[in-house]
Length: 481
Ligand code: SAJ
Image 1 (cartoon, helix red, strand yellow):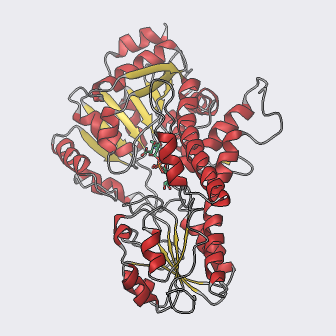
Image 2 (tube, helix red, strand yellow):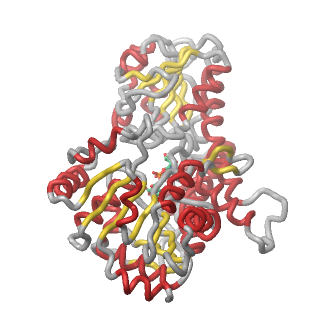
Image 3 (cartoon, protein in one colour):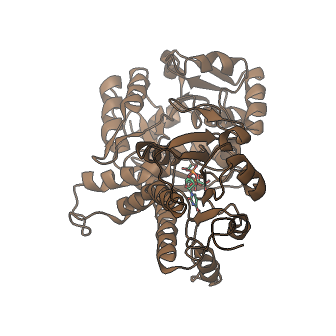
């Protein structure tokens, strides 16, 4: 009997297991359950000290995720009350499932040696294998190194189940494309890349995902092509950011305003000539762009085919990672040179760091570029106070929600995150709180007007602001009134 026959015998997908109740798994389970096309969705979560509590919350219809997800909150309550979604720590429930999706984080243990940490993912895949039944399909939604679905994932599933992929069960990769703040909308509205290890698996995976899409469509391909698509779409975004970050450094060195240049370049518009020019900044954080280039890199290194370029030299994508990871170091350089303008040394200086989240108007601080900046400045002997309006806590770092307290006595004020709160800072108020004759302000996200701060006696430094970074000092002690 072929795999197609087995799917026919099993009938249409009615029961789904979703493994990993996190930012990806919960909205995935809820949108499946709310589609009206499936009888039951089981959310599977290992009962770990950090996440086991989610099971109880989910079964009460309460969303355990942080952040603002009103659509998810509403739908979760609806599907729990409707009885089409339940959460459990018992993986035996997988034996009832026609389809099982797996959405478990895949961080990088060491990007230098390109060693991903698949321990949690492979543990989850093993649990699925133990309970897998004939004629079901497994779909990996986690971001993985190209070759993982057909390679280690397949081997673990076959070993644990005693079944054969492509014969007794289907296997596919359908990468997630959700972003905090719009989890449900993204699942329903983003086109969905779906890739099976064989045509039957692809077709069955399309049957699984089609009901949750509203105006979006399925983009079918092989499992490995789907893995490359996901890692490359983030590697390319990281590359675009690195390009404008490098240009910002050029503009500082040449003495021009990168935002003038950006405006000029962006004016070249039209069929096939428009430039995808992003925004320079203090660095790239988050849990996507900071790792997906390394997954792609490892995928090509693991490939048995010869890569024609770069043979043994650094790749474009890891070079881009290096540029983006340099930006917090550059911010430390701008801060140090700003302090030097007024005869101060980082040692013994008080630096107010505004923004700990990795992205504006969010409380998400995963891989935040603020952290390496703070470490560099503290290694130079500076005292750091950190403010963030959305981040409440961070291991080993005190974060204040009170801007006045953070700024009091600051020799330098460094803007790291594009929170809206920082777009209306008043120079005279900041100077009063600082108490310095010439406080330093370093703008990592183009949030403030340099001329307002310079006129108030600040020493200004900004990413890409080669036109302002060597301005004359204004006010007492500067010889200029
Ligand atoms: N950043 C810049 N300049 C830019 C854009 C971003 O410096 O022009 C920085 C941000 O400050 C942040 C980091 O890059 O520190 C990442 O920002 P991001 O907007 O890429 O947000 P992420 O990390 O949440 O990326 C996610 C990705 N989504 C998924 O992987 C499902 C990415 O593919 C999306 O393009 C991105 O969201 C998005 O556009 O919101």
